[in-house]
Image (cartoon, rainbow, N blue to C red; front, side, top):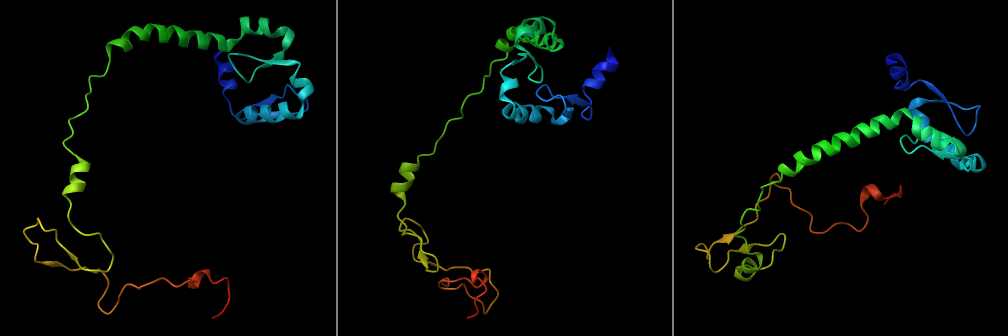
Length: 167
């Protein structure tokens, strides 16, 4: 029993396609193949039903009730349902006691209190009137090496987007 279980998990195991008996598909690719082959063979797809416990099981519609009652994957699903019902009572005890921390921020108030001018790149800004350093000019600091400056505007056509045209 254990050996057949290990064989069913082997991703390299070849499985016969239910839509075309000539197709031998590796187990790891089988779900993708089923979707593709179902679209390519709609006449066969109408005669087959999908198992509710394992979508890889495609059985003739006349045999689906027998398959459902004897499907090996049914026991796995039933065991999961039993485990969930057992854990249901335990989950209700573990309710979260987390509370949102109080927030002292008031963005609208901060916006009205802000008296500084609009930021413009490359210009000197003065500190706000409420600041103790209101007479000091804030100068722009540059991380560029001395002798280098930031361009005042970008060219209309960037050199690397020149499409091979020489200027």
